[in-house]
Image (tube, rainbow, N blue to C red):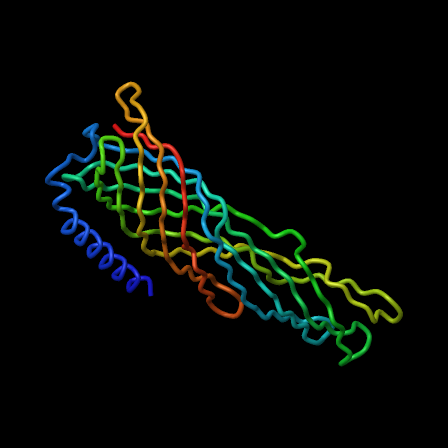
Length: 266
């Protein structure tokens, strides 16, 4: 699956860059990369990524009091929210630049469980138990977006960059696992409470693709560097496979990002 995704990513990237080169050739003939004849750039953004959610179920079992206890774990995983994005790159030919953008994306894990556990005194008299992880576990994961950009100056102070390239994602998910702690109470120990569910981190990586557009307005110069403000919209896609007790679960790691921030040109 990973090899196929890399092949698709490479093909899409080459096609998009080729179309941009052909379609914008007239603009290149009439203008420089920017009015400042820039060689490199740094973009610093605050951003928001649309949240994508995934839910899946795992089944666990363990020996308890000479019988088998079974638990059904309901996992929730969301990717997105506010993010911080930093990009940098350099002009490699004409109006074409190559760069890398790094985004910090929040993954949030929720977990609940239901199950049946054997009775410690009586055979074949299972009791029901439930468990809820009260506070979702959040973690910051990084996404790396390689970007081949085509810059089109629309005026002396305003330019637009259209970009595409491969993306690399990492997702960490906090999932439930054994052992499970059970507390017995009540008359003849007829009541059972799940007091603790062990958790562990399941991690996965994926290669995907990103495309987008970035608009920059040049404000001033300072110590030889151009300073401006910009807006970016980027769509990325990648499917991360996470290991679970019931097999592999695919999670969408990409989404649409909208970002605003500072633009530095050198």
